[in-house]
Image (cartoon, rainbow, N blue to C red; front, side, top):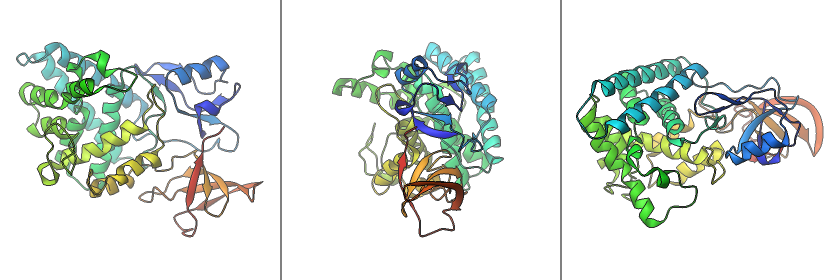
Length: 361
């Protein structure tokens, strides 16, 4: 399969990966020849990139860090949990919320188990879901990314479990925010942004009073928008005042935010998302966390067309664990001429680098 810009595809192109809605239902089935209407539907839903079949890349596959079944179960569980929490509000604890808490804890444990048994780097998480409720898929993605960083840092099972819970619930405060503001497709004005910023305090207040979870989970909701230089919110705390879980989750949160499909802007590719993180690695984000994340995520995902520093063109065919910015490339063009495809490994071909990406179909 090959990763291309949705804007560039032509009618008759064959879809290589199923597109789902946020209920886990198939929106467009793989192997379908896309019509002009289907392409327009994808664009209207804010799908920036899709995977297509093109003959050259039929044996190139994308491996998810968790199973499709677990992702659907996680999506349904987090919807139920957030819905129950919104209905319960700031009233006294209820058995319903305690039940949801147990289900959430079980889901996080399953995600941890699958990820620890999966040696592959994390591929693009934001390319196969169409959702009106961004918060749910975002929460799952941030959980996956956060656990991946924790695994790379060698954290204990207990720490991974706490980080997973903190990541899954980091945006819970948004269920108490006016949905018209939360779902607004245009830029927020200053007053609306101030309302959005309240979700950190609301989430903290709710989690520390409502659920039988470690207080650190509440602090993840409280601090995930803080920054090392004190420029974040809600308190503007700095460096060592931030808990390490919040530092970690902030990295995952920003990366997923900029690489996710949104109706009002194009998603960035993973290497562009990492550039955002590295640009802030001295004053906004913990550099050790950013480095650990870089080792966990496919910087150049399988199926992406790239140009190399020596002028050759190719497609990313495989990943190198812990060298995620130096994948294996299937070369198909040299000196502007098509050639019989062959592969080079950038992990051992150190004098060649990726200089640009091409998303034209």
